[in-house]
Amino acid sequence: MTARVAVVVGNPKPASRTLAAASYVARELAGTDPDLVVDLGAVGAGLLDWADPEVGELVRGVCAAELVVVASPTYKATYTGLLKLFLDRFAASGEGSMRGVAVPLMLGAGPAHALAPELTLRPVLSEIGATVPVRGLYVLDSRHDDPAAYAEWLAESRPRVRAHLTPGLTSGAPA
Image 1: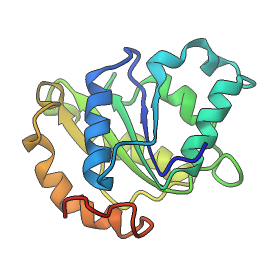
Image 2 (image 1 turned 30 degrees about the vertical axis):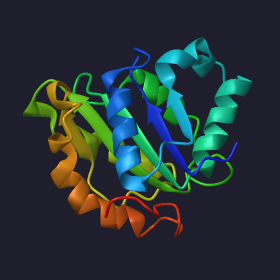
Image 3 (image 1 turned 135 degrees about the vertical axis):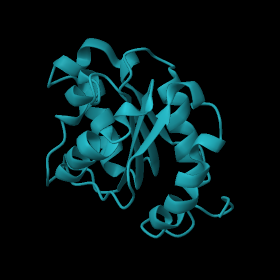
């Protein structure tokens, strides 16, 4: 499984607003729909089985991606346990490490947890081998489908992310 662009979503509810937000960010950064979407709410109990072949394949797909948007709703000022279960599969080096660019994204009910992507998600993504060239993005749940909620962050982050991607991945994408 080769994915140039992947989305990993740690919302326990499949097909969530978090998934919609992460897919939007991936499309805006890469200029294409994600090749791989890991909606952990739909994966189920396999996350608890370290030998599960489906989860192993998902990990390999994410490891191979050039760009990964890693998203979670904000629970108790951090990302979900479901996302933690998945991220625990990655090593800081070797075959199970992220080697591409990762973008931390979190949705929340209010501005009180706006630093959560930077303080909780970004460090773990760096620890498991990803390059995180931009600050984490926090979006209010109530604005998850409003392009204006992303515009400033995208304008600042798009050039930095694209500088790390293979030429051609973003061809035809908005600058």
